[in-house]
Amino acid sequence: WMIVKLLLGAHLAAQPFFLLAGPNVIESEEHVMKMAKHIKAITTKLGVPLVFKSSFDKANRTSSKSFRGPGLEQGLKILEKVKAAYDLPVVTDVHESCQCEAVGRVADIIQIPAFLCRQTDLLVAAAKTGKIINIKKGQFCASSVMANSTEKIRLAGNQNVMVCERGTMFGYNDLIVDPRNFEWLREANCPVVGSIHEKLCLGYHWCSATIEKRGTLALIWQM
Ligand SMILES: *[C@@H]1O[C@H](CO)[C@@H](O)[C@H](O)[C@H]1NC(C)=O
Ligand SMILES: *[C@@H]1O[C@H](CO)[C@@H](O)[C@H](O)[C@H]1NC(C)=O
Image 1: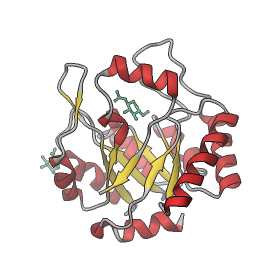
Image 2: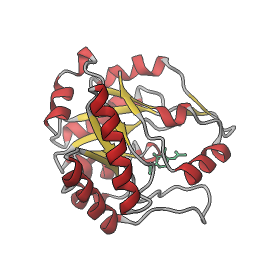
Image 3: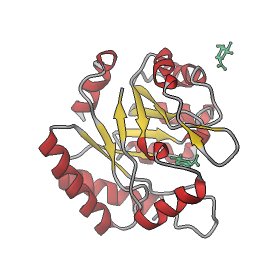
């Protein structure tokens, strides 16, 4: 976890590159362990600091029949095991304020889903855990809005915040990544990460099929 703190300290230099990666959703303990082992082997070989990412709940699936994950309690137990087994920091997302405290006991980085990036109560509850907060820029938001979202974290007493570019939605099912946002997000005065998943995503039909079939792709790089 020191690695992440150091990265936050050095954020304006945009060095070193680090990676948040893992299966989109926790499919099972066995699957998560297998993924962590393989990803860690790759990043160790390449010398890239890794933060393991997986969600315990996908709270906004387009289809009500899609697999959502094991839920908070079971999911956190699995993430705790990954941390211990592979000595990795972990990042996972929260969907409601009441989840923040429990998630903060396990996660090193708490991620705020894009749809919820302006939700003041959720941001404040997450900030109060003292963990690093990664706010995904809403697909409906200008990058300038993120300066206000990061301010909500700071005003709640937590300086450890970063923002993530994940594309913009124009209402045609396609997410468009405008690379100017990476530069503009610096206005939030914190590290900027980019979600590669959305950059590979040509509309939700294709996207959700990918998630269900392969269950991967939450790669994030630091700018
Ligand atoms: C749904 O929420 C997850 C976090 O739970 C987020 O990563 C993802 O981008 C959201 N999906 C869409 C289509 O916005
Ligand atoms: C951010 O908050 C300020 C007030 O603190 C407000 O004037 C401004 O319009 C907000 N910015 C955005 C992009 O909503």
